[in-house]
Image 1 (cartoon, rainbow, N blue to C red):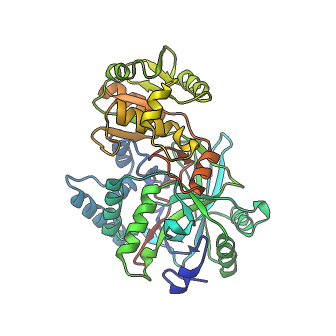
Image 2: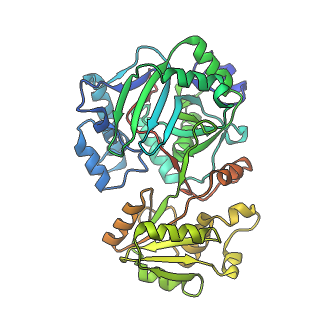
Image 3: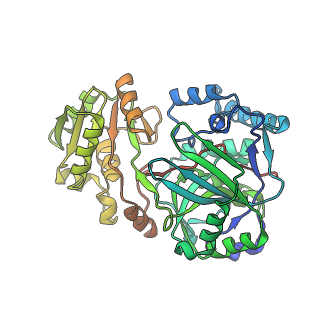
Length: 430
């Protein structure tokens, strides 16, 4: 079995997943496991959601993944000091032996997802082992890298999917067998999801999982910026080192299909009236005096026929569809597959943001990316901005473009359910 940083590992093809000693909360030292968890850092709605999570428990994981201080340097130092203090106090403890972790999420609506958490060797894009499907924002990668350097830890796993061989596969059998045992932890978070975690430490089971995964490639479902951060940090540290690996959750979507949702945009400082005035004559615009759920249904119907968006923020919903073909022809970059050129996210970024509204897509002062639909609308109404709601992209479109090496505009999709942050961490100095 290869260990982290083994020089022979660089010659292997496919996914190389390595056991690690997970850092986990001691349940006797915290109020409840649910109270110390958080959604991934980029899903937390700020500032309201951040403050609520901080107040839920003094040891909530947001104090590590989203530290609050006046400067970036101070924030990262605060996270480092907090992590060190929690380790010294026994709030976080390391499991006694390395293992892979089986992670289950279940919801009353019928959703059941199981996957494997481990340390994955970080590969180059040219290797075709881990397929990104979205572009990243350099300032976010720089921010995440600074936090990981300061803490010397992977604080939350990113989500990868692969297509396994069905229920007969060795990995699937090991996952299902683990789920029949008493878990290391079990908790239910306020979103209604129950979470359970098991460890796999048996050498033969670990070898079977690693051997099978070595024949697969994975798609980044959630965590493009963290994967780009892993790649940056790997180049900064001479190999072999623990930085050759990054914390991931791998889900076999042949066994457990993910749900795909859209990520919405909040345009700061652009009132809905101004946004609508700018698109007059370029899109068909219809005002919808209906509820959010009804407006989303209308958006879904319109998206079947072509590019469509919902604008909100003034107490109503406005459907934009049927864009002027001449507008698209002069604003959408040529030389890309048709599936990319016709994406709603492509039209939003290349046509609306860049050409019509003149909003820089990588400026937090001008635009925010929010996963929760209702929260996006509420913040637009409160702040006087414009919410742009999108319809989700089908998973097969995402995977097909990724295999062609074509990346979608940043924050184009939201795969889920996402792993809760705070259930297991990876310290690079263990």
